[in-house]
Image 1 (cartoon, helix red, strand yellow):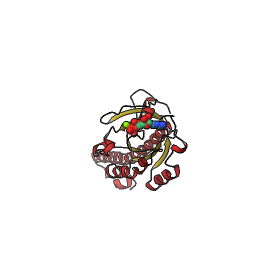
Image 2: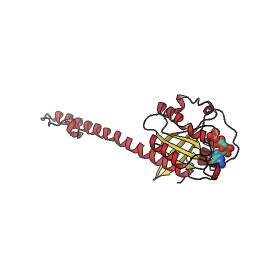
Image 3: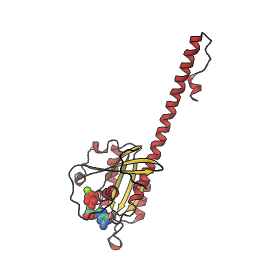
Image 4: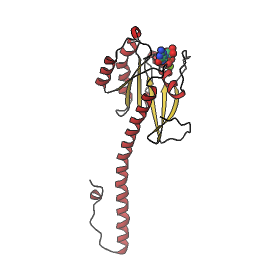
Amino acid sequence: MEDTSRNDFKYLFKILVIGDVGVGKTSLIRRFTKGYFAENISSTVGVDVDSKILNIHGDKVKLQCWDTAGQEKHRSITQSYYRNADAVIMIFDLTNRGSFASIPQWLMDVQRYTTKNAVKVLVGNKTDLKGAKRMVNSRSAANLAEFEDLLYIETSAKWDDNIETLFTELAEQLRENAKSRNLNRQNCTTNYSVVKKTFSIVSYIKKLGQKLPIQTTATLCGI
Ligand SMILES: Nc1nc2c(ncn2[C@@H]2O[C@H](COP(=O)(O)OP(=O)(O)O)[C@@H](O)[C@H]2O)c(=O)[nH]1
Ligand SMILES: [Mg+2]
């Protein structure tokens, strides 16, 4: 999908990226937002935020990716970090069984601190490390994802494998959700404008001293 550098957009979504130290959170965000991979990244302090705008079916969708920096060592990510998250990407390292075993704990925090509507994605990173190095098979990860109602995808930040797909699909899903929420809201607004219109007609008729038509707002709103 097309990346635009201009800072106008139709949708803005906050995406949290969490998971154990070393799974590739920073690398994945860097690959997506900046387009490169660096073998040795010095860890940053505090939370890093990086964004990219994607063009999704003609709409500019800004994905704001929040990266933890160090706090994940002690799983001491605060509740405020999770606030207003539209999506959460939970990453584990396909070559590190421990990082996969941590996912249920991460998920507990996600369920505790985010809304039910937040889109949750499980990511197995480092697909470039194959053969004996691989410690978590796709089936186990897909089973967990299915059980916990998460999307699942395998990536390599190093080889740029599935990174674009991950964020594009996420953006599509978030845009769809936002559109249907707006539609619900709009329906309500339409009802209001219908009601308002009726009132102005009513006051106009009143002014003319005519008999008011019997019309309830409920029937106008189709309730
Ligand atoms: N082979 C390989 N190494 C990766 C990949 N992603 C990250 N790494 C390496 O894994 C280490 C930890 O990455 P980093 O992004 O700092 O992980 P974080 O602690 O989760 O932010 C670094 O040495 C990265 O170069 C990947 O897709 N493949
Ligand atoms: Mg990092």
